[in-house]
Amino acid sequence: MSNSYLVTITNESGAVCGQLQEAGNSTNCYNFNPLTSLGDLLNIATYSGTSPYPQDNYSFTEDYLKHPFFFGREYTGNPLFKKPYSFRHFFVAVNELKEIITNDSRFSMSQFEILKQFLSLGFTSKIEFREENPLYELGYKVNSLNSEVVEKYQYVSVSYTYSYDMDSMFGENSETPHKFTYTCYSVEDIIFSVLHYLTLLEYGFKRCDHCDNYFATKTFKVKYCNRYSPYKGRENLLCNEAVDRIMTHITKRRNSIKTSLYNYHGDAASDFLYEFTSHAKAIKSVHNLKTLEHITSKDYVKQKWYKEEYKNKKS
Image (cartoon, rainbow, N blue to C red):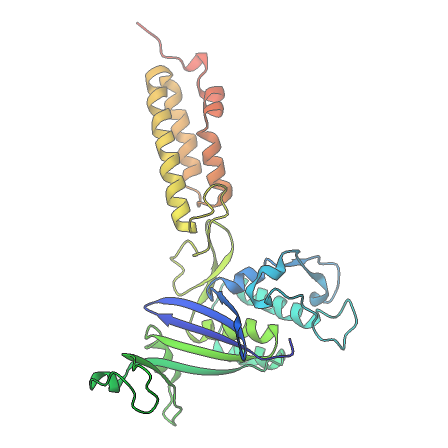
């Protein structure tokens, strides 16, 4: 990646959105989710674990070009290195990113500054907060200098002063609508510009209880990410929506089975409910939901619970 690239991350009313484009080329533009994009990177590199050098243990999965950070282009890395070292810088970055994301503690800005030097990152940033436009308040509808419509709000760059306080600027105002624009010069710059934003705004990482992929969050009480579910037949729903829909369907089947067993195989009803409840207590991962689908399937229930020894005795 010899050109420069712009990474723009905005937070409007709590919705965090990202946009990546080649500088000077507005047509080559990709939208991405800053809260999931770094976690997704861990899925495009496979780890072999055969080399004493961590960066040499990685290779790309076939569909890595689908990740927006690559613009649909093959990654060649530093052309000064001959294969198999052409990807070394990227895989060093991915290895560091993996350590950060899978760590239980939050990453700090002081740690980030050390990492930036270690990886020779060269991105620059511009930080802007949204404010009301004074011209709009005064009733001006058109700027007399350039005839452009005056918007109600405008983004104003952060100004540094000797009394600069990171905690009050970002800790207290992290929910104030804002825009970060990073100028990047490599895939590594793009990756860690997003991490810079998440670190500065005090995000941490955790696994989604449903799809099992990492995502950034400010509270670890959140169970699900805002990716689309990988569950077959529910791919059009976000993870939390898919879990709700699947559990509603499974609960209806459980109730129907319970009623039927009580009526005709009463002794089996409590055993069935015990088995169902023990599985239902587990996290709602794709695997566990498929297990619940299986134990409430017609064939499984008929084979396991509709047995002669469970049949109700008629007086």
